Image 1 (spheres, rainbow, N blue to C red):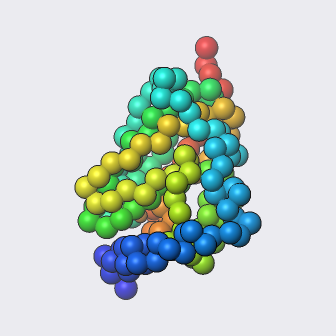
Image 2 (tube, helix red, strand yellow):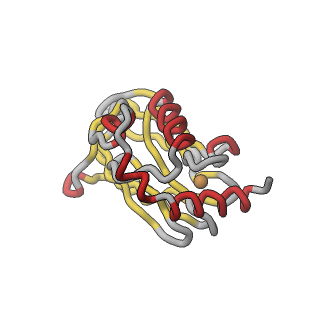
Length: 163
Ligand SMILES: [Cu+2]
């Protein structure tokens, strides 16, 4: 199976199963709409001190593939889809990413309105405004079926401020 075919299947699943999102009442739901996660919290536009653009490609790679930020920093992440299939970006701890991945497998059409994630159509950009309020190693990932498995993941390091 080529990645392109996988992408087409993903688009079909996403566009033709949207009603299931409204019937989504599992445990995963509580964390799914959260504005606070293990990787920080939803940020305010007025607090943004840094803007980073992350490209998303059909080669199943993010560019850059790693991001280092300072603790306390509010970052505007512009996720730009340079490909021809849908991609998403989800921020979280390793464990949160795994959980989300399992949920996506069960329900590819699940809602994606939480502030730590964005679905990005081909040729478009979406932004995430996030405050990294705890140090550690986190991830960003595209959890559309087959994408993460093909390497569509990046590392996110939150460091203590150097000053
Ligand atoms: Cu993707």
